[in-house]
Image (cartoon, rainbow, N blue to C red; front, top):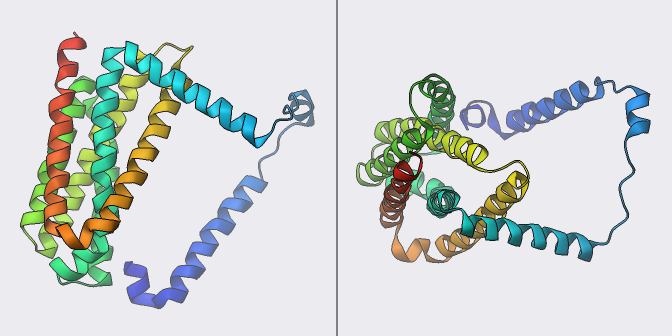
Length: 250
C-alpha cells in the first residue's frame, strides 16, 4: 500500500512480478539427484470423484476423533470461533479505513505495515515465552488480547490508534495461533495427526466461507463498528472456552 501510494500501481506490479521471478529462479537452482527421482513411487491413477470421497472420509474420521478427545474438541471450538471472527476484519477493513477512519491508501498501508510488524514481533515473543509459559496460557492471553484490540479498534476511530491496535493484534494472533498448533501436535497421536489437522483446516475454511458470505450480505445493514464489536466478543468467547483447557492440561 505504501509503495502504491508512492510509486503508483505500475511499480507495485513490477516489484511483485520481480519477487515471483526471483522465487522461480531459486527453485530452479534446486538440484535433485536422479537416483532419488527414479526411486519415487508413481502416483496411482484416480478420479476426481474418488479423490473427493477420500477427502470426505478422512475429514469425517478427523471429526469423529475430535468428538472422542475432549481436549482437542475444546481447541477445535475455540479456533473455529476465531475463524468466524476474522471474516469481518477481512471484508470490512477497507470500508473501515475509508469511512470510519476517514483515511486513504496511505493509512491502509500503515495499518498493514503495523500488522506485519506485529506478526514478526509476535513470532519472536512466542519463541521466547514458550520456554517459560505453557502453550495453553499463551493461547488464552493471545485470544483475550486480540479481543481487546478489536474492541479498541471499533470504539476509538483514529488512525494512530488503529495502527497501534493492528500492531498489538499481530503480536496477539501469533501467541494463540502458534500455541494451538503446538497443542494439537502434542495431544494428537502420530497415527491421526494428519486427519486431525485436515479436519481443522477443512472445517475452518467452511466456517470462514460462511462468515464471509454473511458479512458481505449484512455489512451495510449491521454496520462496520457493530461488526467489529462482535469480532471482539467472539475472540473473548473463544478465550473463555479455551480456559477449559487449563484443567484438562494438568
